[in-house]
Length: 503
Image (cartoon, rainbow, N blue to C red; front, side, top):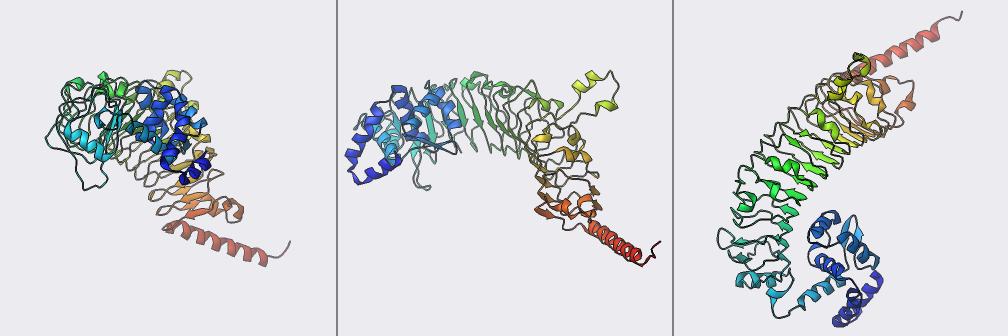
């Protein structure tokens, strides 16, 4: 199909469109809708993000994407949705021909000049399902009035980039919105009548909002998120960089369809829900929330969560209920200087025989799918959790750089899949025991107290070092002083043995 499309470049444009429309006209109506949405708004986007939005639009995107892929009208690369430029052009031409002379009567608007005309002249109608306000030149401006969206009663998708309003508010937004994508929103408030119950994705990073509408109970956005219980279909919540945000409402912890929560860079955030039960949550970003001290209790199994980043927060401890994150693959705790210990489960052989209840309530890292654990720049004083962490067969990368522990546990040898180990700047570490069999990358630079390293100490067995392809032991002076002394002793012993008479 791609070869055929590339060949069409030699054919006059009008003839190409007629050829391509044959495939389009054969599609079911719902598949046509998905195709047009992709052509106008979602080309190049990750299908995992697009599918929930289109499902919220009462379409069947999984089936439609399969059909369009089979017919070579789109293709999936790296989980992103792509289509040939000629097919994109054809899709947009179909929209343009809906009503050639009446821009506000078309179902979708994306071309900046068309958008400018409709919004400034307030000619938009209830026929518009999606609109993208996106300027070609970053220095250009488009002035929107308070009533620009007043007649767009059925608007489902709204993307806004680089737009400037002539006033300080917008009077109306459709309650049919499934996607509100407005980074750096300059408004201080959304319409009081806005009730986004059907909203699937709210993407408003670095916005200046002080409050949302009555539909969200008018909670002040400057200090607290609104009560989101009125948006049960919300799947993506992105408030990254909202630097004035202080409190996240408890309702966020119980949004049953929420799959991604991004509060990265909310540097004044101090209050987060005490507990969360987000069964569909796949990723959570709390990094650079420098005033956040408490991580919530996990109220029940959350097996969908694979990525958790709480780096550079003020969190003091992780709850024992973190064991409910059974699907977690990446745990990032970089620069968490207040976090000195992690929950771990003691060896049952050291407990009384009647201690089952104690074990069941004891903190443990039951993260059987963990692949990457990064606590660079933390202050761990003990790493006993390594003895009971369940990811012994999956952990691939471990970074404990900057920690304060003295003894590296022998239990590290249990991690049969570990290939990358960072211990840079562990200034109190005195000895590295046997390493897991597949470790090929080791950074122990700056371990100024390190005196023993079994793989190096056993210089009579150089095969011990064969698996390690890269190793940094710079500024480990004590270690090399000890090795030098051991080498000298062995040399002297060899000379003495040769000089001894045979018996």
